[in-house]
Image 1 (cartoon, rainbow, N blue to C red):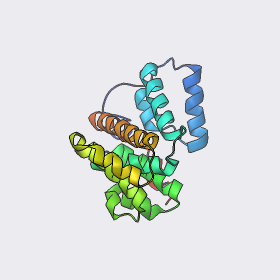
Image 2 (image 1 turned 45 degrees about the horizontal axis):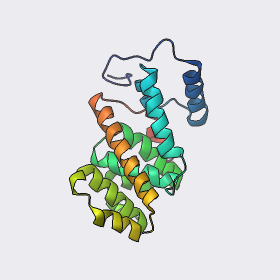
Image 3 (image 1 turned 60 degrees about the horizontal axis):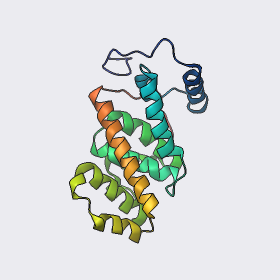
Image 4 (image 1 turned 180 degrees about the horizontal axis):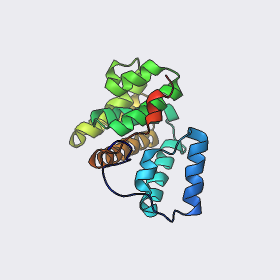
Length: 188
């Protein structure tokens, strides 16, 4: 599987809508590529629209969390799940947004090794616990986030971002989704 996006034979639909073609063109213009995750979902435009709507809301919408913090959640969750696609793509985003390639690498390997402030560590500890032992989340975990200045809306956003990447990681691993090669060289 050298140049395939996934291990499945689900090529993009031949009749992609003008809206989807414009979205892909915008990605290519801004990123220099169309992320393979979008190409993987493009076999079914309804699934692609659902995925991108949720992703864009979580990662680009209004939130008390910064874009970097949301990317850090994506990386911490993806590290726990050993998701190659998301670690390559979102590790590059952490490197780019932080301006610190070493931080991106530490986050990919083990966020606990990164020089994080107490607030960021609490956020990622919650996301990791939600990923690894979701049945053990309790009020004390939410209280710890509040103690670090997170609002209840922020807690929702932390949980929603972690949950989305748990789903996304499982899909990427299930279909052997491969990251765009360009991610490996970004922001180094």
